Amino acid sequence: MGYDRAATMFAPDGHILQVEYAEKTIRLGSASIGIVGKDCVVIVSDRRKQDKLVVEESANKIQEIDEHIIAVASGISSDSRVLVDKARVMAQQHRVSYDSAPSTESIVRDISDIKQQFTQYGGARPFGVSLMFAGINNEPVLYSTDVTGNYLRYIANAIGENDDKLKKHLREKYRKDLTSKEAVRLALEIFKKVQGEDFSFERFDIGLLISTKDGVKFEKKSGRDFE
Image (cartoon, rainbow, N blue to C red; front, side, top):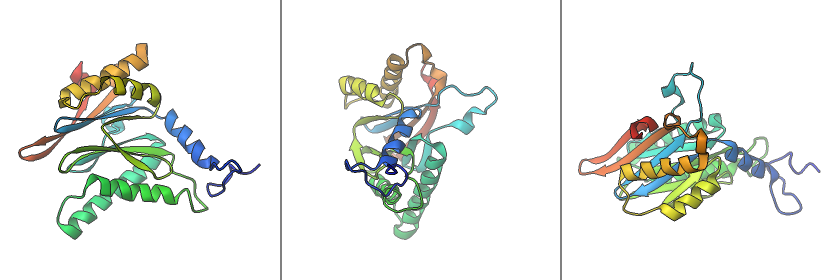
């Protein structure tokens, strides 16, 4: 009794219930798929159905952190906005301090440290959001952070609603030599299988990071571009 009222209190079975509740919130959020391909990394994110009165660009889920890093979130969008803003500041501070681009992992680690603090200190709840970061430094990389402040690197991953089903299809169909277009089409194909009749190209925001001779190229697209 009362073990779920504080983020700093362990239940007798060793669980922190507020953290587990936050993880359930993430699985209620809209889904996103990240895929590392050949010289590229892409994120395909479901915006779900939007009110026709809402300007579409204002609801775009793909967030640019730096010239070579993008992110997407699942869970409480206002929580993600705070963390994305912090990540942007960290990236700019690194450039000012070291005159070089920050590595994707360094940004992910710093954001994960912040998330961990909110599971350890009283007076605040955990961030109810999972963040997936895609970046290119020497190679394309994909990281995901969870509520507890843990993070892992992936070659392909899914967060949000039906993440288990999406990951199952990714395990079956992922290839390392995917081009950016092939990776996007694979993600959309998987969404179509999982969503069934609810699937619509209009629902999706797409972020592409592509390694070129001139550096990293970032593109934002809509699912309609791949119909």
